[in-house]
Image 1 (cartoon, rainbow, N blue to C red):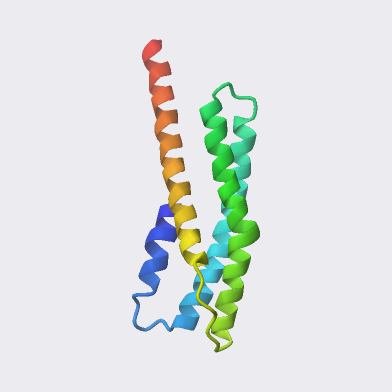
Image 2: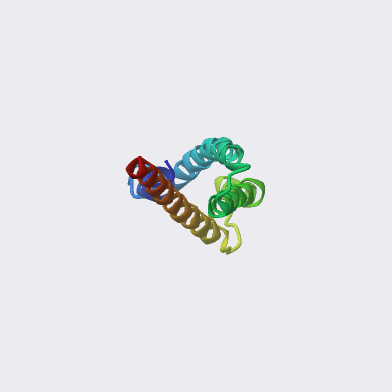
Length: 131
């Protein structure tokens, strides 16, 4: 979902010539709001599932992912929403690196999720070959 929404659907939306910038921004704002709540629920589920595990790398990875989601939820998305509203109101917001910070956070989250999936698959494979 993260790959499809953040790194595929969102950039492609801005290539559509029939979609005005205000409409694209408003659709993006709504998409990220809903997707963020899905991420919050999934991050909390990951935290709950890893509490008490003996694998510290697993706990650390999940905590970092959850912290990234929290940072995006509490800080980045609200500030980016304000910027979108400024544009929708016909003004130009001041220059900011917040969008790039959000992209880097998503890239880090995607990388950590990939590493997490690979390591878990490796553990499952090991447990199947031992038997």
